[in-house]
Image (cartoon, rainbow, N blue to C red; front, side, top):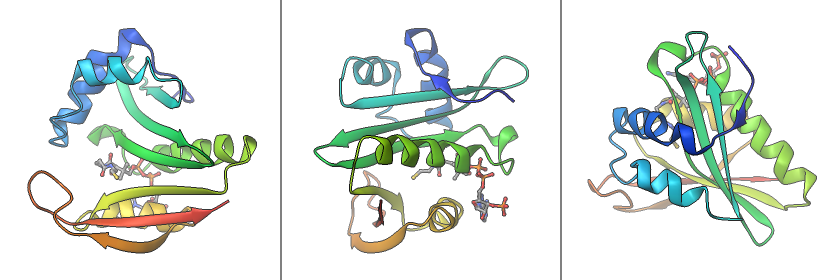
Length: 145
Ligand SMILES: CC(C)(COP(=O)(O)OP(=O)(O)OC[C@H]1O[C@@H](n2cnc3c(N)ncnc32)[C@H](O)[C@@H]1OP(=O)(O)O)[C@@H](O)C(=O)NCCC(=O)NCCS
């Protein structure tokens, strides 16, 4: 498995397919293409050994904070440290430019992602009721840098 590289225009369809596996309907190819035009957005990709997209992550810099917007590891590539590596890369980038905190929202029922973020030093900071389109609550998590 290769290390993360910038996600580019050629990846938007594969990234949207990966996002769709998680029911993230708003993250279609056009949405990824739009993110690529934003100066405050970082998009990274990891290639699988078979050349397909194994993972992506998208984060934004907002003033002096970094917000993780989305991250998906392909089902066949999970539990090999890819998600943790992408979060570590985000935190490195954020620290490098002097950000004070990293933030994210995660589905209240998504224990796997919450466990990953807790191991990466994030703590629960609040609950946003009905945050997702299907009505599920979001847990807000934050990590000081
Ligand atoms: C959450 C997700 C990104 C984790 O990616 P991953 O590459 O499998 O995670 P890692 O292998 O880096 O796991 C790091 C740690 O997180 C925790 N973790 C990850 N998946 C877990 C699971 N299914 N159950 C419990 N803990 C889990 C573990 O502590 C794990 O360390 P360990 O494997 O040594 O026990 C992946 O499951 C995924 O894409 N899920 C669907 C999309 C999603 O939930 N994205 C996050 C949206 S906020």
